Structure formats: structure tokens, C-alpha cells
Length: 326
Image (cartoon, rainbow, N blue to C red):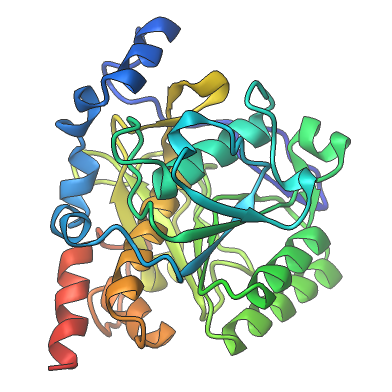
């Protein structure tokens, strides 16, 4: 997706899993009605240390997770039992929407709160998802671009709404210093409110960082392949390597337009998987402080020098936090 010089937007590249390129729309629709096809092949779940955590918990209904993305197709049958809240009608989309902002947001939400028999991951289907589109105007939604000021406003609104985690599966374009300052202030605000921000590192294949990935309250996420290496399109960098984690996303499916499934990958999908893991841990250990949880997700305190972050092991992170309370 294109981005403006003073905006943020989704990157057009999403990794399509091996073996899914040749599937027809009819096959994906059938898989939604026969979801066990995908349940048995969810390698990203096992490789992220999520299998035992997902068996243990569906998430706590009183835990609010913010989704900072496009408008979500809340009428998708995969969300039939989901608890989704929004601020205004522009934060949701019609079921037949085909614009990239709505499809991307729906896929991201599917990783989090879709039913576990929907064909999407549905990592934490019992939590309350609070969605806030940063593409509210028709022009922004059509072009897939928004301003940094909109991003800053959305972060504050989600914190004020009680979100304990915010998922940002966004790719950031160049902005001007005053806009960077606004986002920095918004991140400081959400930090003061005890919010963890999980942010996609981006899909430009660059070695860099942003005001978001450098912030102390942010957990940057990189997409990995099955060989244990970052995807070539994943952004990496010193702050990402020191503060972030990686997740395998090969072959992932999530919810798409017209009540169907679609391939979903890249750092957007990886960030959503991490957000789901954090949500399950907070559901089980609600008194965990943000800095404790971020440290556990990274595998404990370290002095990393690599620009490449380690793979996430959510079960190990949960175990370390649980042991610290015994």
C-alpha cells in the first residue's frame, strides 16, 4: 500500500504461505466451514510457544486489547462470538468491503478474536477487542494512508478506553519532527497508563528504526520463516534487535472479505500473534507489570548487540512470570 511523506500506512507486501497460492476462493470458503484443515497445520502456534498457553486459556473477558488499524468487518461469521467494541461507525466496515485497510484490519482481528473453529488462529477469543481505525475518512481508507497526528490521537483514545495492550500492525512512513513529537508524547501517555504497545517492525526490508520501535513501552516484532531466519522483507535494526522478538508466520490464514479466509503474513501477522500471546499471559496473570511482561517475552534482561531479535517463546515467558510469583 502506498504511504504519504507525512503519514503512516500498511505495506502492500504480505507473505502468502506455501501451498496456499493456488487455492481458489471456493476452497478458502469451504475451509471456513471445515476449519480442522487449518487447525492441524498451525506451525506458527507451536513455534511461538503458544500451544500450551492456548490450551490453558481463551483470554479474560475483562481484558481490553486495542486494535489500531483499519475498519474491521465485524459482521464476518468468524466474529460471531467475539466481543468487539468501537468508538464510531467509521471504525467498522461492511462485510463485503474490499479496500486494503478493511481487509488488513479484519485479518489482524481474526488472529486475535476469531472463533477457534473459524479457520483463523483466534488466539484470545474471549478478550474484549477495542478497535480504532486510523483510516476514518473515505480518502484515507481508499489510499491506505493516514497522518501521524491521527496515530497519536488513536493511541490516547485506546488508553483512555482502558486497553492494556495496543496492537499496531502498521508500516510507518517518513514524518516531520513535530509529528514524531506528537507520537512520542502519545506513547509516553500510554506508558503512564500501563499500556503495552506491540508494533510491527515493517515490511520494507530495511535496517532502521522509528520513534515507535525505539520507545520503551513498545515491543517491536519481526516476521520469521520456518528456517529460523527473519523474512527478507522484515525491517531490522539496533532497537528492534535489542528490544524486539520474532515470530514465524509461514502458511498463516486469517479472516478476509465476504466471510471468507485469506493468507495473512509479514510483520503485521507476527505482531498480532505476539499481541495474542501477551493477552493470554495478562489474562492468567493480570497483576503483571508491563516492564515485567516485556522482559519475559524477550527472554529476560540482556545486552543484545544484534540487529535481529530472538524468536518468541510465549510458554517460557509465562512460566518465568508464574515462577516469580510462587
